[in-house]
Length: 245
Image 1 (cartoon, rainbow, N blue to C red):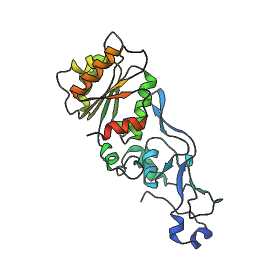
Image 2: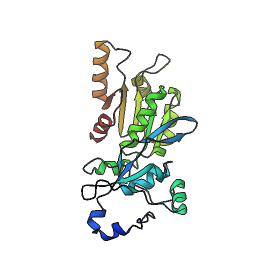
Image 3: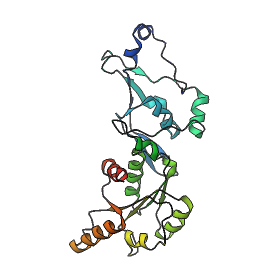
Image 4: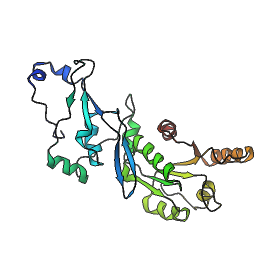
């Protein structure tokens, strides 16, 4: 479908088709995506098992076929390691330009349809810490969002403008903002949240908040249906919030 060429190996041809499908596509190294002169964004970690239909999506975001290889599955000889078949230059060029058929994002183990639907969603992030921003973008990507649909904002005053421009379904705002303002004040200062289906407040353990402030945040978020996401953010905790209706 994507121009994969079956290796011209007599030993493989002699084997039943069922045994050939046991091969597992694995990432050989950490793969990063360029981020407009900023710190690169992690696409996929070394050792991650990739479905063949996911490979074109990673290539479109900057990965190279040489960064993947096939390892034998349970039905194959342990010593056999297959290289990733070459992708024709014309197909690879189309994938990088985004002109190919849209590819579904990585699926949750066991098959989660929510991951497929999230590929059409947009997210807006307000966080003034570059490392936290990068980690959150990585987690959103692993949870199914397309990188070109994740929009970062670092200036609180730009939040309303960005909401009207991008119309995100997911809004993530950090509680600890600069200039004496916090994330809850930034959200409540907006008259409306057009198109937002899920609002998330990220909360770092430091600086340590008082017990009264923690209680106020929890009660306010419960009343306004704002989800609290503790830092450091993990894809598992983020995925639980995204799955919560």
